[in-house]
Image (cartoon, rainbow, N blue to C red):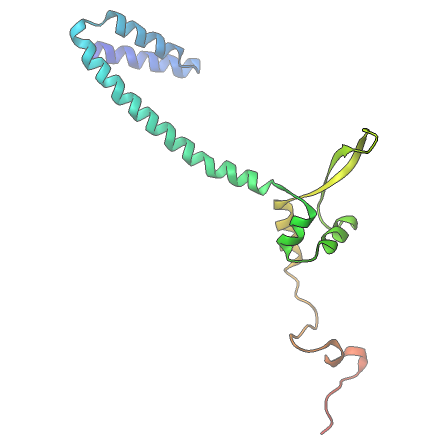
Length: 167
């Protein structure tokens, strides 16, 4: 059995150097063809155990890499302007105004006009990651002189006068 392990180690090193599984498969075929009949049951049992370990490792690797790629795709998702408005909690007209004034970071996708010709920038979209960054940049500055529940005409300094009640 030690000779078979040495052959397997040699095949694994060759596969790592080659970058393919072909040396491993070739070595496995050689072992199965040259092994004595009484050793075949043990070899097949070891192979089955290794197959199960390999399958479990592959599933772990796939699960570990899936959330990162799904998250990256989600951040790069392109939103329509109505979706942007819903995300921000504002009317659709306001999202269209921000895009038209180029205040929002938009992506303009080509489309076809009614004559079937290419129309540049027909479809306007916003990347989710760009929208989140834009909102972060614009939500840091508080409104100057804003006091909740107080009308602008009653704020101190509005139109140069204060409407404090006379005592």
